Length: 415
Ligand code: PMT
Image (cartoon, rainbow, N blue to C red; front, side, top):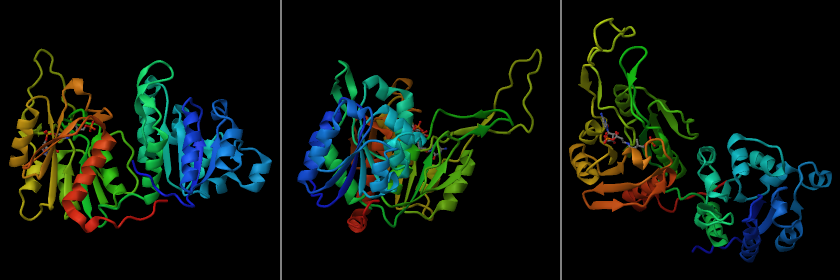
């Protein structure tokens, strides 16, 4: 486990209301041992689990609790509190605190500080497993990540509420390591690299009303664009129609059809790498109707005549002029995952194919987790089931490794 020196680093620790709050006392002690200056904000609910006295005794600092405390505001206003830190840590990050972060609410000192800060925020979620798995919480966590919040944990295990699963707050040693990594700044392992990422489905119009589509949500592709951005790359994200917000800090090109996606990629090239996570429709209708296709009384539906779309990955992957140095495709399969992925690797001229099982039981389309196997000429590398953000950061580190040491050690300070 990384044991960083944190000499004179200023940590603002926001302690939320959860049973895991007791672990923060140990976290404060460890931070102090490593030389950090620790200031704490204790939420009203947090104070039900740990006392201001113990937090203050361990941190050696005054504990901040109330947004409207005139003495505190006179001594150090909430804006200054939020800025006078190198890193803001939220532990335990409760479902409520995460929801406030994701929606920008500011109705107490903790949430106001989080909205006012211009520093990196690291959160350690902790809650009941059902609360963690609730789509609302998962949406809020994804939004917070997209806004740049770093996340450590939660871990899986037995919980105080007698349930079992993900929701336990990361251990103090893990949070400490995450604090060290956050303060070191993101390794700018892709600084100076230009990466084109595609995401989402394509919509192939039948007429002005209807279209052919697939179930891709864009979560995996967008996560890759965000991870590449965080690694310092200049990112162009070519996205089909999705319901996700545009990630800040990347150039986004919205497209609808496969043909438009191919054009947008050509415009975005040259680049060092192309990552094709989009689920591009293989076919489009041969002739798009200019008007809404009407039902004909007495006759059945007219068959749709389809024609093949350009294979974008193969077009770029096998082009001597356009091909980036690294070309990564995905393979969405419901059977014979590895065989099909290996065939695509060859046919489409990719360096790697990231194979994922998209059969309905896998929940990959639209879900938050993915189980991928990276297929290359060197063999198959099977990753465990991970969040799509973790798949993205693993893939980005592989991309950085591919480009070698040129991009290493050029990291800057976060914040
Ligand atoms: O968006 P999510 O809900 O997060 O789901 C993620 C995902 C399942 C869509 C993603 O992980 C994924 O697998 N993307 C690729 C889906 C796909 O189109 O697979 P494919 O096996 O049909 O195509 C193989 C590769 O060729 C892909 O890189 C695809 O982008 C590319 N392709 C396919 C057809 C085509 N006409 N042109 C292409 O470039």
